[in-house]
Length: 274
Ligand SMILES: NC(=O)c1ccc[n+]([C@@H]2O[C@H](COP(=O)([O-])OP(=O)(O)OC[C@H]3O[C@@H](n4cnc5c(N)ncnc54)[C@H](O)[C@@H]3O)[C@@H](O)[C@H]2O)c1
Image (cartoon, rainbow, N blue to C red; front, side, top):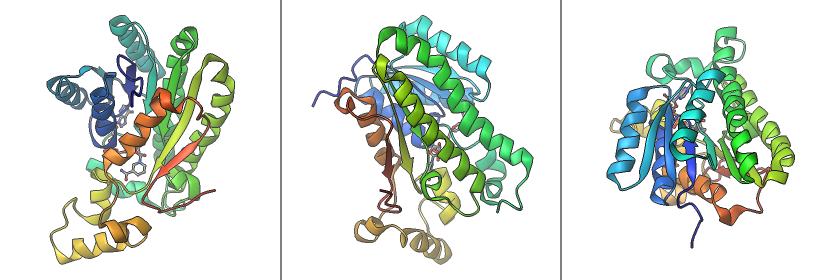
Protein backbone atom coordinates (compact mmCIF):
# COMPACT_ATOMS: atom_id res chain seq x y z
CA UNK A 1 0.00 0.00 0.00
CA UNK A 2 1.33 3.46 -0.85
CA UNK A 3 0.99 5.53 2.31
CA UNK A 4 1.88 8.74 0.49
CA UNK A 5 4.77 9.45 2.86
CA UNK A 6 7.58 9.66 0.30
CA UNK A 7 9.20 13.10 0.43
CA UNK A 8 6.90 14.34 3.20
CA UNK A 9 8.74 16.71 5.55
CA UNK A 10 8.28 15.65 9.15
CA UNK A 11 9.35 16.93 12.53
CA UNK A 12 9.24 14.55 15.49
CA UNK A 13 9.79 16.18 18.87
CA UNK A 14 11.85 14.35 21.50
CA UNK A 15 12.95 11.79 18.92
CA UNK A 16 16.51 11.43 20.20
CA UNK A 17 15.53 8.20 21.95
CA UNK A 18 12.64 5.95 23.03
CA UNK A 19 9.27 6.07 21.30
CA UNK A 20 10.18 9.22 19.33
CA UNK A 21 13.26 7.53 17.88
CA UNK A 22 11.15 4.63 16.69
CA UNK A 23 8.59 7.04 15.15
CA UNK A 24 11.38 8.95 13.35
CA UNK A 25 13.03 5.76 12.05
CA UNK A 26 9.72 4.28 10.86
CA UNK A 27 8.57 7.44 9.08
CA UNK A 28 12.00 7.70 7.42
CA UNK A 29 11.78 4.06 6.30
CA UNK A 30 8.53 5.00 4.52
CA UNK A 31 10.38 7.74 2.62
CA UNK A 32 9.61 10.80 4.80
CA UNK A 33 12.32 13.41 5.40
CA UNK A 34 12.69 13.62 9.15
CA UNK A 35 13.85 16.52 11.34
CA UNK A 36 14.95 14.82 14.55
CA UNK A 37 14.18 17.21 17.38
CA UNK A 38 15.52 16.77 20.88
CA UNK A 39 16.51 18.92 23.82
CA UNK A 40 19.93 17.22 23.64
CA UNK A 41 21.91 17.86 20.46
CA UNK A 42 23.91 14.63 20.71
CA UNK A 43 20.70 12.54 20.82
CA UNK A 44 19.23 14.40 17.82
CA UNK A 45 22.48 13.97 15.87
CA UNK A 46 22.77 10.30 16.70
CA UNK A 47 19.25 9.41 15.46
CA UNK A 48 19.61 11.65 12.38
CA UNK A 49 22.83 9.74 11.60
CA UNK A 50 21.11 6.37 12.11
CA UNK A 51 18.39 7.39 9.62
CA UNK A 52 21.00 8.43 7.04
CA UNK A 53 22.93 5.19 7.53
CA UNK A 54 19.70 3.29 6.86
CA UNK A 55 19.34 5.19 3.56
CA UNK A 56 16.84 7.85 4.69
CA UNK A 57 16.86 11.67 4.72
CA UNK A 58 17.15 13.50 8.01
CA UNK A 59 18.46 16.53 9.86
CA UNK A 60 19.16 17.04 13.56
CA UNK A 61 16.89 19.79 14.92
CA UNK A 62 17.94 20.63 18.46
CA UNK A 63 15.49 22.86 20.34
CA UNK A 64 13.89 23.08 23.76
CA UNK A 65 10.26 22.93 22.68
CA UNK A 66 9.08 24.65 25.87
CA UNK A 67 10.62 27.82 24.40
CA UNK A 68 8.51 29.32 21.58
CA UNK A 69 11.46 31.28 20.12
CA UNK A 70 13.58 28.12 19.81
CA UNK A 71 10.69 26.29 18.15
CA UNK A 72 10.19 29.13 15.61
CA UNK A 73 13.91 29.04 14.86
CA UNK A 74 13.85 25.26 14.41
CA UNK A 75 10.90 25.41 11.99
CA UNK A 76 12.65 28.18 10.04
CA UNK A 77 15.72 25.93 9.63
CA UNK A 78 13.52 23.07 8.39
CA UNK A 79 11.79 25.42 5.91
CA UNK A 80 15.18 26.74 4.74
CA UNK A 81 16.40 23.19 4.10
CA UNK A 82 13.32 21.45 2.73
CA UNK A 83 10.88 24.28 1.89
CA UNK A 84 7.83 22.91 3.74
CA UNK A 85 6.54 21.08 6.80
CA UNK A 86 3.93 18.38 6.16
CA UNK A 87 3.83 16.37 9.39
CA UNK A 88 4.33 17.28 13.04
CA UNK A 89 4.57 14.54 15.66
CA UNK A 90 4.36 15.98 19.18
CA UNK A 91 6.15 13.19 21.00
CA UNK A 92 8.31 14.79 23.73
CA UNK A 93 6.38 14.46 26.98
CA UNK A 94 8.69 13.39 29.75
CA UNK A 95 10.74 16.41 30.84
CA UNK A 96 14.43 16.27 29.88
CA UNK A 97 16.66 14.96 32.65
CA UNK A 98 13.86 13.69 34.90
CA UNK A 99 14.22 9.97 34.21
CA UNK A 100 17.98 10.22 34.62
CA UNK A 101 17.97 12.12 37.91
CA UNK A 102 14.63 12.03 39.70
CA UNK A 103 12.29 9.52 38.08
CA UNK A 104 10.13 9.21 41.18
CA UNK A 105 9.16 12.88 40.91
CA UNK A 106 6.88 11.73 38.07
CA UNK A 107 5.11 9.41 40.50
CA UNK A 108 4.10 11.69 43.40
CA UNK A 109 0.60 11.86 44.74
CA UNK A 110 -0.84 15.27 43.94
CA UNK A 111 -0.63 16.26 47.63
CA UNK A 112 3.10 15.49 47.62
CA UNK A 113 3.73 17.37 44.38
CA UNK A 114 4.80 20.97 44.10
CA UNK A 115 4.50 23.89 41.71
CA UNK A 116 7.96 23.37 40.22
CA UNK A 117 6.92 19.90 39.07
CA UNK A 118 3.56 21.15 37.75
CA UNK A 119 5.33 23.86 35.74
CA UNK A 120 7.80 21.36 34.31
CA UNK A 121 4.98 19.09 33.06
CA UNK A 122 2.72 21.92 31.88
CA UNK A 123 5.69 23.58 30.16
CA UNK A 124 6.53 20.49 28.13
CA UNK A 125 3.25 18.63 27.66
CA UNK A 126 1.04 21.66 27.10
CA UNK A 127 3.16 24.65 26.05
CA UNK A 128 5.55 22.40 24.08
CA UNK A 129 2.65 21.10 21.98
CA UNK A 130 1.10 24.58 21.58
CA UNK A 131 4.47 26.07 20.54
CA UNK A 132 5.06 23.41 17.90
CA UNK A 133 1.51 23.48 16.51
CA UNK A 134 1.57 27.29 16.32
CA UNK A 135 4.88 27.28 14.46
CA UNK A 136 3.83 24.76 11.77
CA UNK A 137 0.22 25.77 11.16
CA UNK A 138 1.19 28.79 8.99
CA UNK A 139 3.20 26.72 6.48
CA UNK A 140 0.68 23.85 6.61
CA UNK A 141 -2.36 26.05 5.98
CA UNK A 142 -0.58 27.88 3.09
CA UNK A 143 0.05 24.58 1.34
CA UNK A 144 -3.43 23.23 2.18
CA UNK A 145 -1.99 20.05 3.69
CA UNK A 146 -0.83 18.86 7.07
CA UNK A 147 -0.90 16.10 9.67
CA UNK A 148 -0.47 16.65 13.38
CA UNK A 149 -0.20 13.65 15.71
CA UNK A 150 0.30 14.13 19.44
CA UNK A 151 1.47 11.36 21.72
CA UNK A 152 -0.61 11.58 24.86
CA UNK A 153 -1.02 8.71 27.34
CA UNK A 154 -3.79 6.48 28.58
CA UNK A 155 -3.20 8.38 31.83
CA UNK A 156 -4.91 11.31 30.10
CA UNK A 157 -7.91 9.15 29.15
CA UNK A 158 -8.60 7.35 32.44
CA UNK A 159 -6.49 9.21 35.04
CA UNK A 160 -3.56 7.54 36.79
CA UNK A 161 -3.00 7.89 40.54
CA UNK A 162 0.44 9.38 41.34
CA UNK A 163 0.38 11.02 37.92
CA UNK A 164 -2.40 13.57 38.42
CA UNK A 165 -0.75 16.55 36.75
CA UNK A 166 0.66 14.43 33.92
CA UNK A 167 -2.84 12.93 33.40
CA UNK A 168 -4.34 16.42 33.41
CA UNK A 169 -1.98 17.91 30.84
CA UNK A 170 -2.27 14.89 28.54
CA UNK A 171 -6.09 15.15 28.76
CA UNK A 172 -5.73 18.85 27.91
CA UNK A 173 -4.07 17.93 24.62
CA UNK A 174 -7.10 15.81 23.71
CA UNK A 175 -9.49 18.77 24.04
CA UNK A 176 -7.04 21.04 22.25
CA UNK A 177 -6.60 18.55 19.38
CA UNK A 178 -10.34 18.11 18.88
CA UNK A 179 -10.93 21.87 18.72
CA UNK A 180 -7.93 22.39 16.45
CA UNK A 181 -9.09 19.56 14.16
CA UNK A 182 -12.34 21.47 13.62
CA UNK A 183 -10.58 24.81 13.08
CA UNK A 184 -8.07 23.58 10.50
CA UNK A 185 -10.06 20.96 8.58
CA UNK A 186 -10.67 23.65 5.92
CA UNK A 187 -6.92 23.56 5.18
CA UNK A 188 -6.92 19.75 4.89
CA UNK A 189 -4.97 19.44 8.12
CA UNK A 190 -5.73 16.38 10.27
CA UNK A 191 -5.14 16.50 14.03
CA UNK A 192 -5.14 13.28 16.07
CA UNK A 193 -3.68 11.74 19.21
CA UNK A 194 -2.08 8.38 19.99
CA UNK A 195 -2.30 7.16 23.59
CA UNK A 196 0.31 4.59 24.67
CA UNK A 197 0.34 2.89 28.03
CA UNK A 198 3.50 1.26 29.47
CA UNK A 199 5.82 0.95 26.48
CA UNK A 200 9.36 -0.42 26.30
CA UNK A 201 12.18 2.01 26.90
CA UNK A 202 13.22 4.18 29.77
CA UNK A 203 9.84 4.55 31.44
CA UNK A 204 9.08 0.84 31.39
CA UNK A 205 12.46 0.03 32.90
CA UNK A 206 11.56 2.42 35.73
CA UNK A 207 8.43 0.36 36.43
CA UNK A 208 10.01 -3.05 36.16
CA UNK A 209 13.57 -2.33 37.29
CA UNK A 210 15.00 -3.31 33.91
CA UNK A 211 14.04 -3.74 30.24
CA UNK A 212 15.28 -7.34 30.51
CA UNK A 213 14.35 -8.38 34.07
CA UNK A 214 16.93 -10.77 35.49
CA UNK A 215 16.43 -10.97 39.25
CA UNK A 216 13.36 -12.66 40.80
CA UNK A 217 12.22 -9.28 42.13
CA UNK A 218 12.40 -7.66 38.66
CA UNK A 219 10.57 -10.61 37.10
CA UNK A 220 7.82 -10.35 39.74
CA UNK A 221 7.47 -6.59 39.11
CA UNK A 222 7.19 -7.20 35.34
CA UNK A 223 4.61 -9.94 35.96
CA UNK A 224 2.50 -7.51 38.01
CA UNK A 225 2.70 -4.81 35.32
CA UNK A 226 1.77 -7.33 32.60
CA UNK A 227 -1.17 -8.65 34.63
CA UNK A 228 -3.20 -5.50 33.87
CA UNK A 229 -2.85 -5.89 30.07
CA UNK A 230 -5.36 -8.40 28.56
CA UNK A 231 -3.20 -9.00 25.47
CA UNK A 232 0.04 -9.26 27.45
CA UNK A 233 -1.06 -12.49 29.12
CA UNK A 234 -1.60 -14.28 25.82
CA UNK A 235 1.23 -12.67 23.88
CA UNK A 236 3.80 -12.56 26.69
CA UNK A 237 4.91 -9.00 26.07
CA UNK A 238 4.28 -5.33 26.77
CA UNK A 239 4.22 -2.45 24.28
CA UNK A 240 7.14 -1.83 21.95
CA UNK A 241 8.01 1.65 20.66
CA UNK A 242 7.32 0.24 17.17
CA UNK A 243 3.66 -0.36 18.15
CA UNK A 244 3.28 3.37 18.73
CA UNK A 245 5.31 4.23 15.61
CA UNK A 246 3.02 2.11 13.40
CA UNK A 247 -0.08 3.95 14.69
CA UNK A 248 1.64 7.30 14.08
CA UNK A 249 2.57 6.27 10.54
CA UNK A 250 -1.10 5.47 9.81
CA UNK A 251 -2.30 8.83 11.20
CA UNK A 252 0.47 10.71 9.35
CA UNK A 253 -0.32 9.05 6.05
CA UNK A 254 -2.77 9.80 3.27
CA UNK A 255 -4.73 6.61 3.98
CA UNK A 256 -6.14 8.21 7.16
CA UNK A 257 -7.44 11.33 5.38
CA UNK A 258 -10.95 10.77 6.82
CA UNK A 259 -9.74 10.47 10.44
CA UNK A 260 -9.42 13.63 12.50
CA UNK A 261 -10.01 14.77 16.09
CA UNK A 262 -9.58 11.18 17.34
CA UNK A 263 -7.58 9.43 20.05
CA UNK A 264 -6.17 5.99 19.27
CA UNK A 265 -5.05 3.99 22.30
CA UNK A 266 -2.22 1.54 21.55
CA UNK A 267 -2.07 -0.32 24.80
CA UNK A 268 -2.55 -4.11 24.71
CA UNK A 269 -6.06 -3.61 26.07
CA UNK A 270 -5.04 -1.71 29.20
CA UNK A 271 -7.96 0.73 28.93
CA UNK A 272 -10.89 0.49 26.54
CA UNK A 273 -12.57 3.88 26.21
CA UNK A 274 -15.74 4.24 24.13
N1 LIG B 1 7.17 5.08 27.59
C1 LIG B 1 5.94 4.90 28.04
O1 LIG B 1 5.62 3.88 28.67
C2 LIG B 1 4.88 5.93 27.74
C3 LIG B 1 3.56 5.66 28.13
C4 LIG B 1 2.57 6.59 27.83
C5 LIG B 1 2.89 7.76 27.14
N2 LIG B 1 4.18 8.00 26.80
C6 LIG B 1 4.48 9.24 26.08
O2 LIG B 1 5.29 8.91 24.95
C7 LIG B 1 6.17 10.01 24.67
C8 LIG B 1 7.61 9.52 24.58
O3 LIG B 1 7.97 8.88 25.79
P1 LIG B 1 9.35 8.08 25.97
O4 LIG B 1 9.11 7.07 27.03
O5 LIG B 1 9.87 7.63 24.66
O6 LIG B 1 10.27 9.26 26.59
P2 LIG B 1 11.88 9.39 26.71
O7 LIG B 1 12.15 10.17 27.94
O8 LIG B 1 12.53 8.04 26.57
O9 LIG B 1 12.29 10.25 25.40
C9 LIG B 1 11.80 11.54 25.25
C10 LIG B 1 12.82 12.44 24.59
O10 LIG B 1 12.24 13.76 24.67
C11 LIG B 1 13.30 14.69 24.88
N3 LIG B 1 12.80 15.92 25.48
C12 LIG B 1 12.43 16.13 26.76
N4 LIG B 1 12.13 17.42 26.96
C13 LIG B 1 12.30 18.05 25.77
C14 LIG B 1 12.18 19.41 25.36
N5 LIG B 1 11.82 20.37 26.21
N6 LIG B 1 12.44 19.71 24.06
C15 LIG B 1 12.81 18.75 23.19
N7 LIG B 1 12.98 17.45 23.54
C16 LIG B 1 12.72 17.10 24.82
C17 LIG B 1 14.25 13.95 25.82
O11 LIG B 1 15.56 14.51 25.77
C18 LIG B 1 14.19 12.50 25.31
O12 LIG B 1 15.24 12.24 24.40
C19 LIG B 1 5.91 11.04 25.76
O13 LIG B 1 4.98 12.01 25.32
C20 LIG B 1 5.30 10.23 26.90
O14 LIG B 1 4.50 11.02 27.74
C21 LIG B 1 5.19 7.11 27.08
